[in-house]
Image 1 (tube, rainbow, N blue to C red):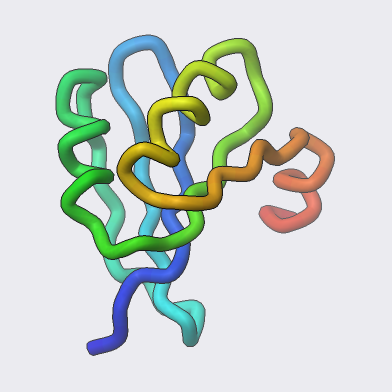
Image 2 (image 1 turned 90 degrees about the vertical axis):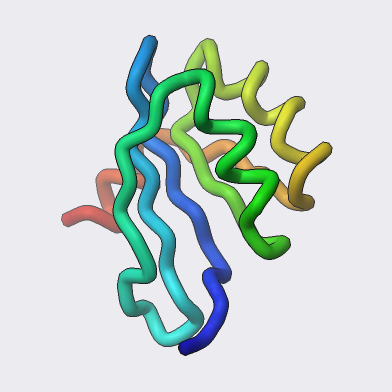
Length: 85
């Protein structure tokens, strides 16, 4: 089984939805985590790209994740809508 190369995070106030994807595009996991579980879970993952929608709280989380991982781009809604469509 190949490693996760992308973690997509849907940010919310209390519960976060995570989607891990492998290099072939297959789903590695889908998780629902609380605010307290998020950083510890991300820290345990192999180094990969973390993608989030650009919103008010994303900038704060974006400063936290590079301490655990590496690259953390913020995606604008119009880009996410194109991917989902």
